[in-house]
Image (cartoon, rainbow, N blue to C red; front, side, top):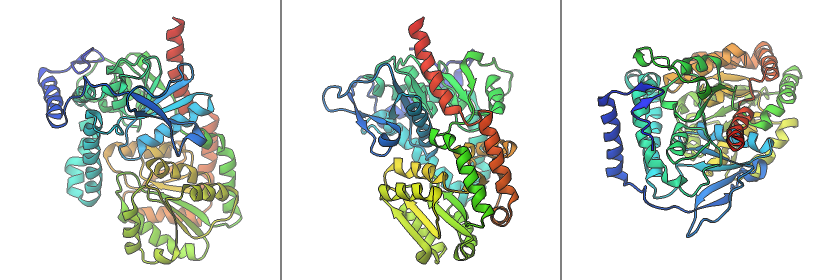
Amino acid sequence: MKDRSKVIFGNEISERAYRKALNGKKKYINKYGDDSTKNYPVKLVKNACLNEPLGVEDIRVAEGENGSSFDLEKGLIVGNIRMGFGHYRISIAMASAAHALGYTPYWMDLNSYPNTTCTKVIGAQNDLYSLGSRLSQKSRLFNKLLWEPLNYEGFRQLTYNSSDQKTAELMTTVFKNIPKEIPVIGTHVWPAQAALHAGMKHVVNAIPDNWPMALHLAEGSVHLIQTRQSYMGYRILNGMAKKKVLKPMPPESLKYTGHYIDHELVANIEKDCEARLNRKKDGKPMRFLLTIGGAGAQRELFAAVIKHLIPAVKENRAVIYINIGDYKQVWDALKRDVPSLNMLGKTHFNNWDDTKAFCENAIDGEVQGVHVFCNENIFEAVYCTNILMRSADVLLTKPSELAFYPIPKLFLKRIGGHEKWGAIHSAEFGDGTLECSDIPHTLQMTDMFLNEDALLTEMCEAIKINKSIGLYDGAYKAVKIAMELKNSNLGG
């Protein structure tokens, strides 16, 4: 197995950094064990939430022998982890595009295999990241001195990638019984790295965000980029060894695709934008979609926005959708922060059929009041935002993976310095605001959407133009690139 921690795209890692990477792997082994010699048979199970709309099948550990056969012609693995909601959402976009193009998407979450070293390591990192996200919103000092620098410059360095590559060597065992010819699209770098270490032959690495960081490198894969700015940064590995000029990535290792977006959203852009403009023109209540991510941060900011909008809701000038994901405790806290929600809030909790019916009816129907969505099932928790988007007018979100979606967006304060470039990109393409740095500016922008025509109109027109130039075609292109890797190899 090639040691991908010593040399990265022709750039040698210092002996000190390499020893640190080795020691990091040893610490994980001492804490969580090494199951590299174990055999985990696998089976395919229909995904309860995503199989019906998108044909998704989950790859699970089987009892005894391998339980299912893979479609070696049309099958495509979407490799991911649950770390927040972002990587799951990008995976759903890939699965949606694969299904629309006639392929079978297999869902492989490396954080879902009980008692494996792989899941234990990822789970521990996920817990740390979620804790850091929440602390960054509560402590300005923590955010300034630790969280922003780590997310902005710490993850940017090649030495961080060296350590990650060693960690990913502990995640390969779950690939042992998966046919090596099936293409893999990783929507987090660990599944891409682990797939390569495990000998998977056709690996695509779908990079999120718009800030080039060595954290996202998986040498040996084809790296996909959503923005031109980010493409140039990755091409020369800009700033990934401080001021040192590095050897660039080979051109065949990097491809620009545009945004990773679900087929259902892309196909309905014109219809949904026209519906938004018609609601505005006809004086219908404006629909604000607030989505609280997997880290559960920013509750205080959401509470301020909701409290500000309540008078407009009572006057039937505004409607609020709130997706709290799988965080029921967030709803309890919001009701304490905004007592009127106890009377106004209609809950749609753990009833997926009800949620789907609401979302479908809202596309062409009338909606009033405040609607709150919560689902214990992680797929439903994430996908709920996607299916609410079509009938929403404005999405209020931090500028992470949702910054790239084709809906007018009001950007809340970021969590981590890397996210600010998502808002900058969106503002430049006209489908989102600038990042609102505090509550007063967030409320100002909320009022502008509510009381003016200009913002919504301009963003809807920009979204239609963006579609015409293929800006939202990234998921389709990712699937096609993955299948071309396989087919060109077969042909050669």
